[in-house]
Image (cartoon, rainbow, N blue to C red; front, side):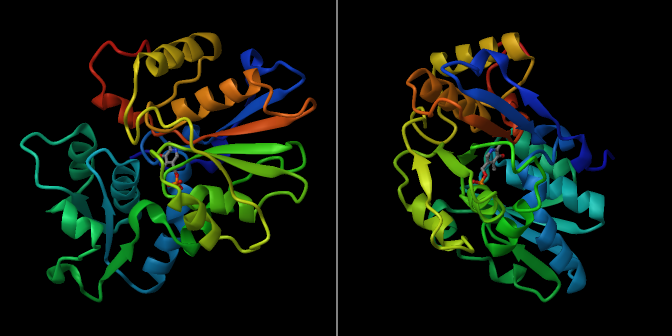
Length: 292
Ligand SMILES: *Cc1c(COP(=O)(O)O)cnc(C)c1O
């Protein structure tokens, strides 16, 4: 098994994005591990610490059939010698997604529950055991944000740090650990989910910090895409050598590039885009869609 290497993160300049007196870099957290990539490890680490200190034997968590959080948790549990159970949204499918197959191969036991029960956060009673430690969907919560806040980068160099948003945990953690003079900008990949602003706000340690989320780059919603996004992913890879995933990072890079072209950022801005990996999600695209 491959272990997790936080020190393999690099800060790379994106030459093709630098224009209108704006400089752009990306923090390659996708490099820490092929499966437990990007923010997923950071959000999990304090939950794992607490689970181990409570002598839990099994981690139970929640997610959909394509969830990066599910597969990352499965792998991290295997790495740490913990059992894992995934409560999966929706009826059991005939054919498992690549994500679920991998999670199962890493030893995760899958429990499928109806979308209704999932939404109502109904936990199967047989799973409520003292030895089971529960982690919320996406690692959302103060511990997830605190883990995220341990992400290391040059805090004094950047005026704006940009991230994509699913649960909002990463954005909260980045806000809680940022340099005073810099700002955090979130790009939502969910369609018109304005509750995210409150979700991020609830995890802030300083409630005076603004929560700045742009909701215009979801491409139709979670895991939706169009030809334009795929073309962008391929040409971005061609010009930079950086692979992106169609659920999160591609929408984030597309958004920041578009905002730079629209002169959204002040001249002199130094932007850091957090690349959080999630590349396993691309396995659900038809073969040949991407050039990487
Ligand atoms: C999970 C994930 C996100 C979103 O993180 P949240 O903390 O849930 O907002 C962004 N990018 C990638 C690649 C992810 O896997």
